[in-house]
Length: 389
Ligand code: LLP
Image: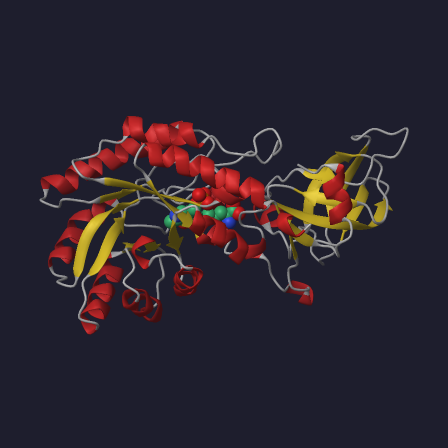
């Protein structure tokens, strides 16, 4: 991805910044679009992964819907131009104000996470003389086999309605005249790389689909959420996730009833690989036990390593000095923030480095800039887009 022309162009910019390769983004969106459209599947892009406007415009052009998790995300999606009939709104803690706003915009559906929320949406829809479309988010108790902080579909997680509450949920629905149940919704976790996990999800969805059908609910939508993982270790070997295999699992294992639509909410898989955090070495500190590369980017720009001990491939963009190799020295690559967890990678093997060298932290397009903070009163995030070079 980073050829010498690109590196020269990038080296003219003040660091740190997020670099977005809009061609790779377009190719990724195309691949997802093709693979899903062939099977008649609908994809909503999960804005939480990255709500950068340049990226959102590409997602919109590709024809995806939007999966939002706050009133502000709903508003952002509408402002960018997403059709409200292709917007879904999820989240365990939707406020009255957010629900009222989303109702006023006539969004496609609320993914409802509790019986209490059903009653509130019913009341707020009544205030507007409307009927709200909802999908019940059900916690299927399927282990996503990913980092426990990004697992969401187990009984111990706060998300969704538990199996044992479903009978009560149906009772509640019958007493909510301003709610129309259109479907069921699931999301079991993120960065899932073992496709067998999605087969287990399909088995649960089929059981529940039948359960609702037996009780007289004709569901229009089966929403299976997002979660497809990406290759953080070798971003250049696999820049575009295998969407075909992913969607094929659902076409093979999900039992659709006549007329039912299948919806997805992909975030990471669509935008991760097109983004890199580009930074410069400020100082090289050779300690007794460790060598440190101190960068001008830190956990304030990319929090995933500090928060989840997430691995990101770290690449030196500046030339490898003559007579050395590209993996000669072990460095702990750290940021300037006053926290020991402000570390992008330990014992990273790189060519000998010096002040001013350009470093890229790869696969940073999802859950990167959106999770940035102002801690230590850091600067606003800067960007460089491939079409500006
Ligand atoms: N739908 C729902 C209801 C979700 O909660 C999420 C992500 C998605 C869809 C999109 O999932 P994806 O396709 O991106 O895996 N900050 C963490 C990831 C948190 C994911 C939260 N939910 C990280 O940096 O790894």
